[in-house]
Length: 211
Image (cartoon, rainbow, N blue to C red):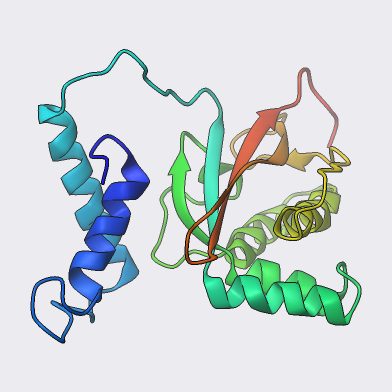
């Protein structure tokens, strides 16, 4: 485990509480804790370790708003099977991506663009889209929503190990009336167990567009 890497700390905390044999033989220490509580524990531990961890010369810093979607192993396998059985952009497959992708990290104002001031427990991509759509409905003018299907299709390309083909569909931010962003799948991580994580960067469109 690398104490300077946030996802390693999170993995350690989840294993400590949920995996059998880590603390007690044959049983988990406390498998009933929610994802939210475990993530909070991991955040606290990570912050405490940073205070006593020697600084290395290399340091990673975020420059753009970003959120991370995680798909567990059964979900990844189900999506792959769905793509094999039918068209990858079918409604059923796209719903899988939206309903099963969980937000496990956010930086900057990433979630505020969708209408969330903070990240609730077990937040899914479908909930992000729903909150954004509800706020758009309250607006007086029409806002494009092509970015939703484009983002899901780009996630499917990544899961299927196919080249990126973004259409650069713009998304209206809820933080300002003239804020437009490109939600782009920038980084992908494939874990040892087959689960996957995707970093969605919110790249701001230069200038202004009319709604």
